[in-house]
Amino acid sequence: MTNTANTPNPKDCPTVRRKIGKTTYIVHVHFSETAKETMEDKIKRMLREEVRKM
Image (cartoon, rainbow, N blue to C red; front, side, top):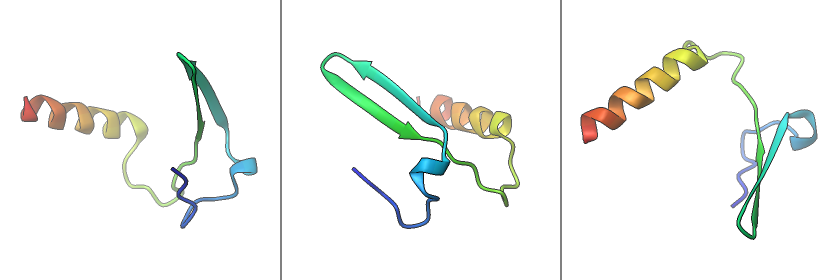
């Protein structure tokens, strides 16, 4: 799956490659410069939502 609608050029982004089994996953990392939430806050929010769903 490729989504390039509002993402910067992948060559300008840090890249993480991870091989799991016979599949290699390539993830281009980018952050919004206008975000109002820190990465720590976002992870905490995501964890709270996941626990709430359980």
